[in-house]
Amino acid sequence: MTATTEYAVQLRGVWLRLGREAVLRGVDLDIPHSGHMTLLGPNGAGKTSLLRLLASALRPTRGEGRILGYDLRDAAAVREQIHLMPVDAALYPDLTCRENLEFALRMHGRGLEGVGAALARVGLQTAADRRARFLSAGMRKRLALARASLLARPLTLVDEPFANLDAAGRALVLELLGELAGQGSTLVIAAHEPELAAQLAPRQLYLEAGHLREVVR
Ligand SMILES: Nc1ncnc2c1ncn2[C@@H]1O[C@H](COP(=O)(O)OP(=O)(O)OP(=O)(O)O)[C@@H](O)[C@H]1O
Image 1: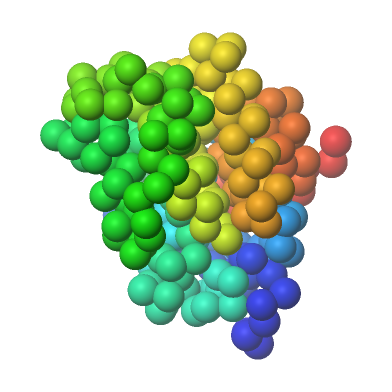
Image 2: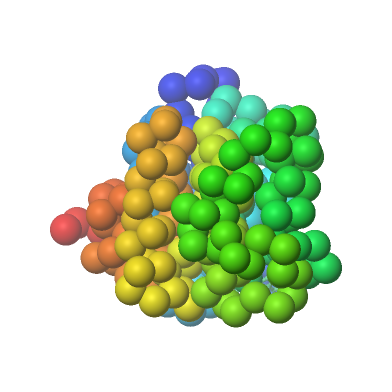
């Protein structure tokens, strides 16, 4: 495959086997910059696995791919380009909310300004010094959203952003991810709420039995 920076994501003939199961069976995918995409599909279809593959946390069994022009096999380069917001938020349980955000910024060589404002933005200002292990599921999601927003990588991969959130939390997801998109980050969102996700990522693909197909709306 020719290296090009025209696309945020390019996959060609990607197979992914996990254990005895072939989760992806020859997937081709082109996502242009700002071609925000929603990934739909039933439980166990492989949406999380595909996001992890795009984050270079899982290697294709066969086939190849590029993220912002970087070969998926170059994990260090790919990880500079992406931020993965997993469904369980992937926080450090013994760090406070503030420390979780500061740690993420330090890992990317970034200054720590903006942490207080980011916490306030997601309604966690009074929980800033609470350890992540004592947060509710919705609060963890809000903290993960603040982190994605602060890091603002060129490709933001989001796994079930609307899960565990109240109506205000869902509105906040739309607002903050919408801002990220406005700043030029390409969004790939795995979700079970096609209508909500479509507000951010109108192109929808359905993953089933290892194959991706476009959803015609
Ligand atoms: N590390 C692993 N080893 C073996 N099998 C795995 C592994 N991770 C996931 N799987 C399997 O791969 C399949 C796809 O799982 P995945 O979590 O990607 O689905 P999903 O579409 O995100 O599901 P959900 O909508 O329930 O979140 C499932 O059958 C799962 O059991």
